[in-house]
Length: 355
Image 1: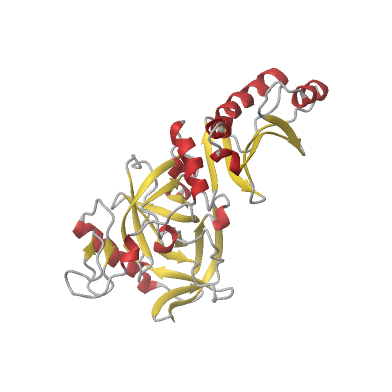
Image 2: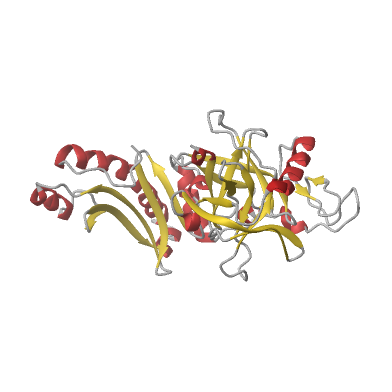
């Protein structure tokens, strides 16, 4: 079950993929997946999420390492392959979460094992490597890692590129030697690890992009919403899933908070499905006002709970905090409602439920 070692990475900038290497007890992904973030969400295939710390990045190699304080000793061990044995037309599989979708494996072949592109050699494959696949492994038929998939080359139409495993191994050698615990940047020239903002490498004098040490700022509205999350014990790092978009589990229910029509902040959760019988009683309940300020509604066979507020109301001096509380507390209401509807009306849990 190699897929258990493949994780989704989520930030306020989007999502990507990472894979766990037991030899270093850490996760590997692309640099561009975590660029601008030193804390990220690392989400397992079972939807459990962990806060990860980015401890090492290389802009030139497009590789990053993430540490998570949790026990992953039961995960399948991934072995890094000897890429010198790769040949054109070898069968390979790209593992990951394309476009933030659930875990996916796509099959292809090696088109060229050492293709020169933009000054570096990559493994070229026809296996689709889409946004979201970035940072995930390309594996051979034996399940061994031959490289790290990257989708950053937007001008490479219908061609997949993978950072080869030999470059990954060199990167891992640096990591083992340094035993890094805090955020560090690898010098492009001498491979020294630099853990504080500087314009020049203190070892070789090469220029260092000091912006690599800066974290991307979130909007004022995002800060307001995340302050509400923190006040209710929700870790916003584990909820971020793109720009001004949050997605997280509260109990068994999946909660989404997002901006609609550039003016409204919405919170909703798909909590249940309509039962096969007893439709009149459940529909009467859904149409009642018993759950205000939250609304229940249906779409196809699914039952939703929702709340919407204008973004300006969140900044209102008199009732802004109340509006923020209502928005965030939808999570608790949703976690209660899915059980209530299941036990009272026989409504099956939603397909997104974590049960």
